[in-house]
Length: 94
Image (cartoon, rainbow, N blue to C red; front, side, top):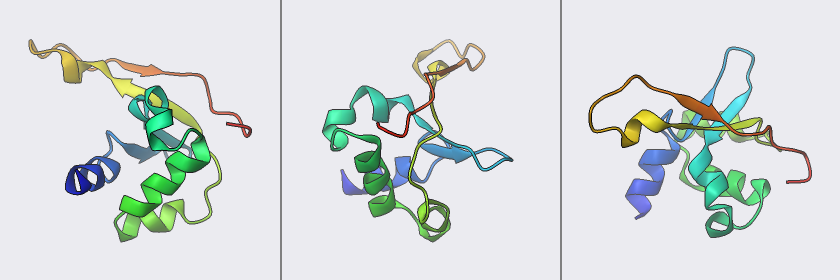
């Protein structure tokens, strides 16, 4: 589990940054937020725990998650084009 958590957190499916520095995290973290501590702050703590040095540097001063998305093509055995579904932007209180 530890190895899988690190692999996912450090993969763009888990966390990615756009050209403006906005951070998008997998919707899996939102859907199972309670399993990761119940808040966006707890999700960030989880990500920091498993981050490789490059991701850790990007997460160091981060206090919020900008967006959540899920690549539904991961569930499509037929290989349909990727469809990213973005959830509502995270709020500072989450």
